[in-house]
Picture 1 (tube, rainbow, N blue to C red):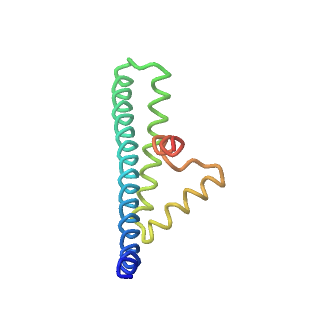
Picture 2 (picture 1 turned 90 degrees about the vertical axis):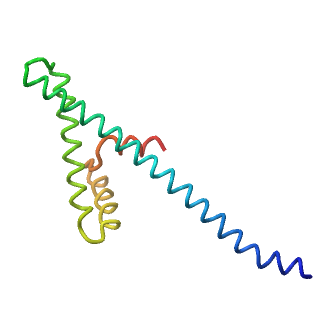
Length: 120
């Protein structure tokens, strides 16, 4: 009888520990995905600046310039989301704005974040 009571009292504590561990692992996975997306965005922005520097010297091709302009639009999208991050209730407003943008057909997220979402 004592063992059964101990198991009943121990089981909820064990499930709570398991849930905490799962949520911790999930959070770490999401942070690693965010880190990879930000790292990709940083590399693309650095490449964009190099292409613009080459363009001022007359050494960049039209394809490179088109690629740099596309990355510049991604930077502007990131700045636009940054404005929403400062507003109150940002954890609610940002997903709503992204969802409304998808309904309307406007891509609000930078390309590195959209690709990481598609990889899942």
